[in-house]
Length: 292
Image (cartoon, rainbow, N blue to C red; front, top):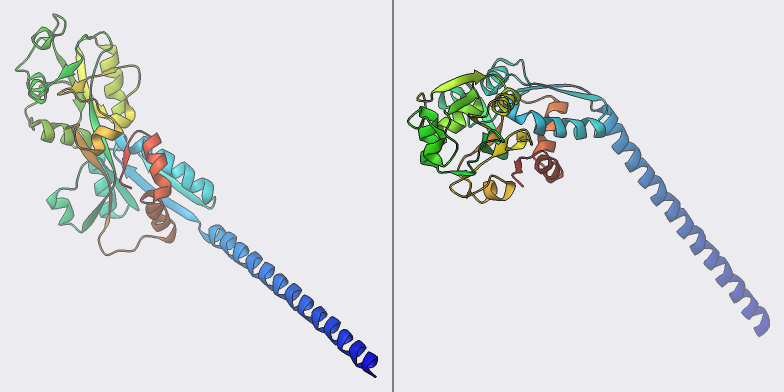
C-alpha cells in the first residue's frame, strides 16, 4: 500500500515537472516572438521614413552636412537629403520663404532675421583659419596685425616678419557667413581692402594657393595642404582650441528653421540626428567642433 502511494506521488512529481518544463518553453517562445515583433516594428518604422529633406546655405558647412547626410541616408534609405551651397544669407532666406526645410548659416542669425520668425540652433562650432600661401614665411599673426593687413594699413609682408612683397587680401562676397564672422571678430566691418571677393570657400583656397602674396580666411573644416594656416596670437586653430575658447576667431554653425512650424517627419529626424551624440564623431571628423 505504501509502495503504491509512493509510486503515485512519484508519477505526480514527474507530471508536475513536465508541466513546468512546458510552461518554461512556452514562456521562451513568447519572449522570442515579442523580440521578433519589436525588431520587425523598428524595421517598419525605418522603412516608413521617406521623402526629401531640402537643406542649403553656407559653403563652409558643406563638408559637415555632407558627412551627416551620408550617414543619415545610409540608416534611412528612403530619405533623400540634398544640400545647395549658396551662402549663409541664401540659406537663411530659403528657410524663411519655405524653399528649404533647414537653412544653414556659418554665423549667428541677425536680429532682423529672427524678427521674421526664424529660429537658430547651433549644432557645431568652427574656427575661421587665417591662411597664407605656402611660400610665405609668416607663421604667426596677432589680431591687431590681421586687422591692419585686412584694411590695408599694413601693405608689405616685411612689416610682420615676412618677405618683402605686397599684401593681397582674398575674401568672401558680401552676405557670406565666413566674411561676416571674420570682419566682426577682427573688428574690420566694411573696412577691408579686398583684392578679390569670391563666392565660395574653395575659391578662396585656390586664390591664396595661386598667389604667393595672398592671404585669406576660410573655415577650419576646409583647410588643406594647398595653403598654410598661421597661428593667431600664438594659438593654432583646432577642435580643442575652438572648444576651450583660446582660439579667438571662431563662429557657430547654425540651423535656421521657422519658429512654431513643424518640420516634416524626415526633416525632423535629420535635425535630431545632427544634434545627437551619434553625430558628434562625424562632425569632428569633418573638421568642425560638435556641441556634445
